[in-house]
Image 1 (tube, helix red, strand yellow):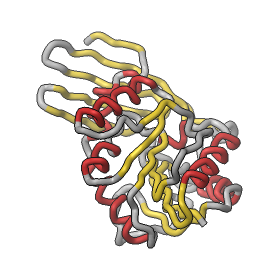
Image 2 (tube, rainbow, N blue to C red):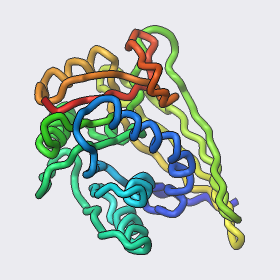
Image 3 (cartoon, rainbow, N blue to C red):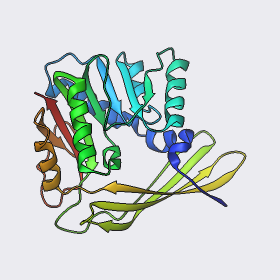
Length: 259
C-alpha cells in the first residue's frame, strides 16, 4: 500500500466519511440540549471549526439556519458545495476560531469532537470563548466537547475506528506519541487506510493538541465570565445522565450558557 504524508483536513471526502458516519448521535444529543438547557427558541446555529459541515448540513435539512468557520479552505469549499447542492446558502467561511465576529447573533453554537484543543495557547483559548460569547444571544448555548487529561489513572493512549460508504472505506488509527504536561502539549500520530474502487493508500498525519486537566479547564472558564457552565455530559451523549467531573474524567461535553 502506498503511503502519503499529509493532513486529513486536505482530503475532505475522507475526513467527512470517518468523522461524519456517527452524526446521528451528536445531532440528537444537541437537539436534546437545546430543549433542556435554554428557554430560547433555537433557530440559528454556528459551528466554529466546522470542517466539512458534517453536522451543519443535517441541521440545515432539519430547518435550522446554519453557519460556521474553519481555517482549511478545502474543507470550507466542500462544506459550501454540499450546502448549495441541497439548496442552502453557502454559509461557511474561512476563518480563525480564536478571532472572529458575526453579523447577526446566534441562538447556539457547538464544537463537539475535540477541535477546541487545536488552539495552542491560553490566549487563543480565551479569545475563542470570548468570540463565542459575543456571537450568542443572551441565554444562548455553547456545547463544547473535548478530552481532558486525567490526573488519576492512565489516559487513553490510542483509538481506532472505521467507516464505509458504498465502495469507499476508511480505517483510522490515532495514538499519543508524546505527552508533555509541563508544556501543555500532546503530540499525536494518525494513519488512515483508504480504500476506493480504483486505489488504496495510507495517509499518515501528525498533529498537536493542547492539554487540559479538569482544574486547568475550570481556570480557563473563569477568565470568560460571560459563559456559565450549566451541565456536563460525557461522550455517550445521554441527556438523562449528566456527570460530575473527577480526577479520572476524560471525554466531557460542557454545556455553557451566555449570561
